[in-house]
Length: 146
View (tube, rainbow, N blue to C red):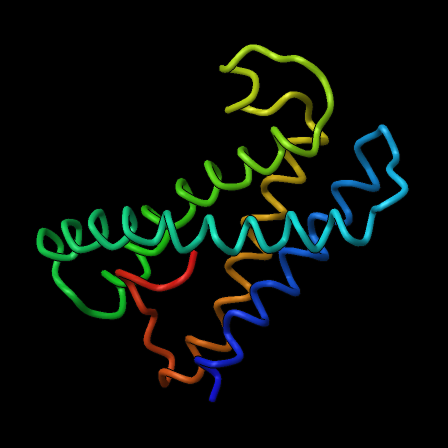
């Protein structure tokens, strides 16, 4: 049942976080709610796309460090957090106005932007908790929504 709710939980979390980003990074928009939902859905689709890369990288890591609880936690942190930084950087490029060099787009255009990205990573990880709980506390590494 949680597996069916998982995409809905992610979509809601991403939509709310994108709404916060759209409100906090001017220029303000009239269609804030629809744009938030659109960006939340885009972020969910990005998770599907990047999930393939995560599956490949985490499978490689698991084959080298083994598969157990500490290894799964390590793999989750070493793979998911950097990939989620990239995903939230793409979202920031859509939300944060202005023209910035590529390096600044990846590293963050301001402390507020970097904090928003870190918050997005935290939201992404928190939205994984229902799935982790439904799996009996096993941290799923490999292919699942990012």
